Length: 220
Image (cartoon, rainbow, N blue to C red):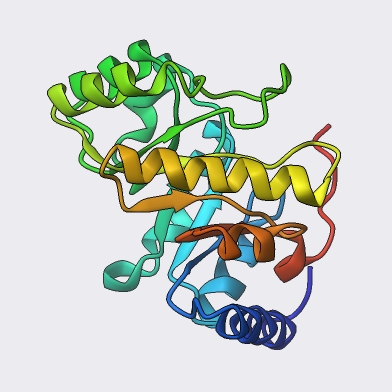
């Protein structure tokens, strides 16, 4: 885990890259999954107001640290697969849900009166290993989320597993087109290895872990 100063330097490099791409206002989500609470503290000290977590139990274990920030608590983005039965535990801790991909999850969020932003995850690469609804399923899911009263603000996707840059650009461009067609402003796409491609294709949120904090330990 790098020092706060190192995280600040790495974040400055990211900000410079975003400025070069003409998108300095892109929201940088510091992906703190797999790191201890020190990553949250470092991100906060570096001036990052948004963090991303993938696992319910890991996020819940970090809530005490998050509460220490009081009025300046970082916004928590849940960016991992969400089991519908975990919504009850998470709903008061999550400010933005990036991986809503099915009717049952929409309904679970609505039942718990979730007030956080909602983004629908779309599988724009067509890979079987990727979560997300298909582009063909998207219109019905958007309609259902809106009728359920959720704060639907955008879409989310992941680039191809093999890191192929042209395929990544195509996947990200597809999401931007789908979002525009649905009247949604936000596109959460791009991680440490491909965020530059995503921003060039219209990302509004990028999810960065390794580029800020280094390699994480594998979950046991």
